Length: 161
Image 1 (tube, rainbow, N blue to C red):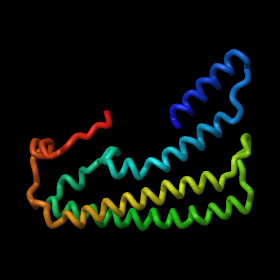
Image 2: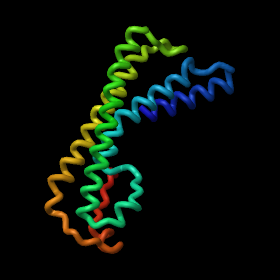
Image 3: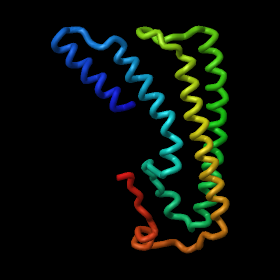
Image 4: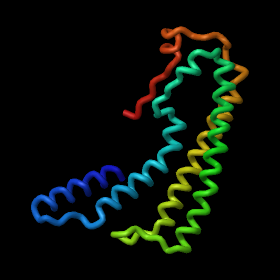
């Protein structure tokens, strides 16, 4: 989807340069497609650990304490995301009743909110899976802090290529 958006933007630029007329609704297309792509890929990113993690607090803790701290923080995040999800579900019906549409293309907003809710649901589910795995693996954690070389040796690098 992102490649199609990039091609659409390039076509828009070329048309603006040569014909002084671009692709109708290109800004809406970019906004909504990127919004949907991001919301639908958050869960995959969480499960694969594809995000940048700043763990300066956790690195100073013993592994078991760090695990408990992470479980608590993830649980708080799950509750917060569940509240956002609840209000987003209400927004679907609100947007549908109001008949809210995008200004140029006339695309219904409730469909976009629905797709965001689907992505948010799977994001919450990914957090629940992460917490479950942390709880299930807690008893197997060695409560010894590793040095930098040991951490690097224990880390597995996965690539899609």
